Length: 273
Length: 273
Image (cartoon, rainbow over all chains, first blue to last red; front, side, top):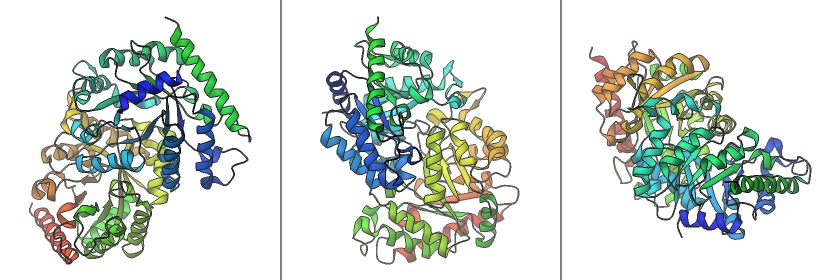
């Protein structure tokens, strides 16, 4: 089953467009997990078990593992999601981007080593740098379009041929990348007006939306601006607001509580037409 | 000693602007190293020993390690360069790019875990995404400007405010990033005319130039277009043409031979005014 099919199934079965981002920050672990780097796997598995029935996707951010040499723990976490939550989509957030021969190896890293359903990538090097990802059967390639950070306008909003660069990226996704493979885009929750314009360009293409929760994106605005015609189409990511809801030993219970609230807020916004 | 000082020292001591890219492709290893992934470290160390006196820099490409779970071998290779070739600059080619909190972790990966002097990064997310790299004292941040691949024009050459996007990147490097930290740029050898324009914008800023050797960039054109006023300023990378000069057990000798030829061709071009 391909990325789009798995995502459609995940949205339906979970009745959720929430994605929990696995950004294990060892400096914010609860008091019961003070082994630091050695506890990354334990921390993530407890978050996964506390939220696995509430989400359409999990999105581990590889930098949190790579900074500490914890790739083996990331492998174990990915395998754990595959085994225990087989209907939840697994997105590796890596934002890779390199020329073709090297991109093939990054595709192998994401799709073989970590067995992810999809990986985030950077468009700056152009279509030929994305082809090794897009051409991998049944896998998803989620291209950065308009990122959630405050400084994302600096290059992404420069005007090219009478429209901002990020819309050129969206148009290229709709017209070219979609014909090569199962493409999706990243648009930050902090820019709902831009999200609406991207949605109009890309039709039913899935959009990964980081930036709610700790980054302050408004859920109702995101849902209204970004959902597809079938009231799906979004993978709305929250990381820190869920992972660090509580620094006590009950962190997993608190994570579940915030995840439920977030899922419900998404669904409430989605039920108002 | 900072990145710029180390680079100046390396250019002088080696009398070379050649950088050997460590892209260990297990499918192209010599017949004497048929252990595949287990031999990555051995292969790279033999290349390093065969070329260490001929280069200003080594540039391991992390994808070749990450695809195979060989990060520990990459750590060992970086430590080996530090120990045995302390005056050679170590560049981690990772092309990272993410929002601030995550970028801090990628900076840690490059500068602490692998102890690199510099790392390659992607500008698409804007200045705030580069700050964690630029703000690290004594370390180099090498930003993609105009990449060597055939499709790099697709976004990098789009016209914004009457100039191509890659020149806006170069201008931002010269005007902003340079004031935050020790910045450099990537410009592909396959585009020497563009390299000349970038050099005119960035003054004496170092430029990493991939794309000679297997990718076909012309060395004389690169040197003439890209050198600074002191006849230095370039880190000219060759990977495959040196690493896979010969697939027999004498691969390291052949690598040395090609590295000498390449260094000499660079120096000959640089001596003609």
